[in-house]
Length: 150
Image (tube, rainbow, N blue to C red; front, side, top):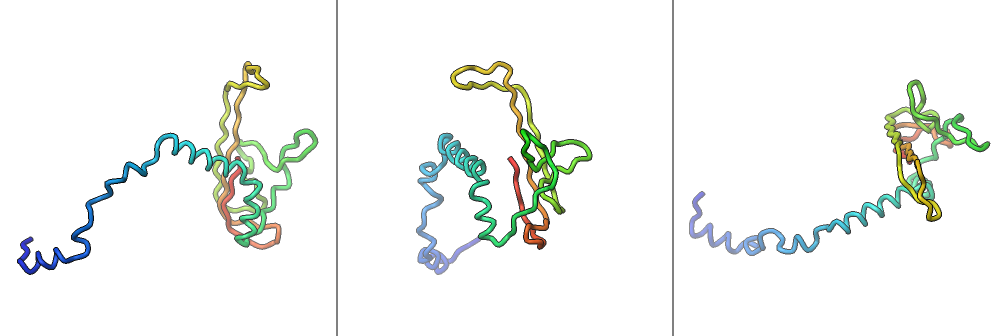
């Protein structure tokens, strides 16, 4: 591309002609490992405590609370509205639900300390699920939502 003297003069007068190339201070704002771990820890804390504040967020959005499945697992005389993972089982925890369900059940050996005493043969288990789709809420109307069970 050839620029005439007139074109060079117009380009030099342009407001973008005198801007610096890139950001010299980019690395000053880059996340360190410590900052990244702190941010992910805060995000994990938000997820772990979401059962307390998430119903309020759902109410603010106008969505109704989903109806839990009427069956489940009884532990110590209390009914918990979930069933284990396996073939021919309903992995959704929402009654009258139509959508996508994702399940990750992780278990295995672990290590732990309770009251200063190391636990021999500790076992780790985690049941994580997400549900995204349409459901009939407690108000009897159809809604769309995304939910997680951790």
